[in-house]
Amino acid sequence: MSNTPHELAEEFPEKAALMSQLKQSDAHFAKLSDEYHEVNRAVHRAETNVEPVSDQAETDLRKQRAALKDEIWGILSKAQAV
Image 1 (cartoon, one colour):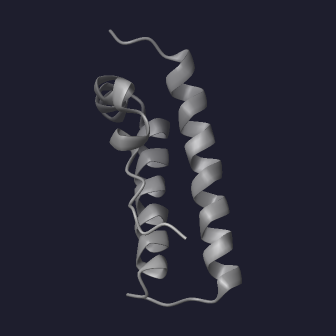
Image 2 (cartoon, helix red, strand yellow):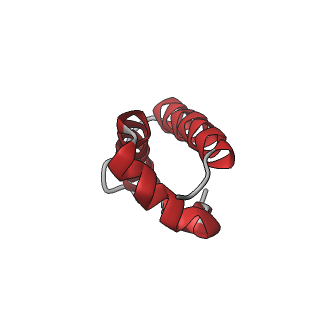
Image 3 (spheres, one colour):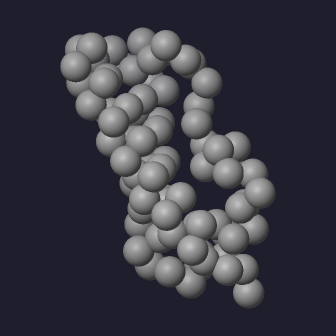
């Protein structure tokens, strides 16, 4: 179990400028980013027992975070900075 937050800027540091740009210009990316941060915060709260949840619920949150991260990476890997 890791208690380290998995912020997108830390996960993809080389794509920080592109993520910022896409949040402004792509509504779908902005929504995914917001959803990722919401789920990521929920995982962190569960891991640190600030808001304890069952093991299954925590696993489900982690899977949801991973799926969002994969989708975000898919967009980032195809997008070009302007």
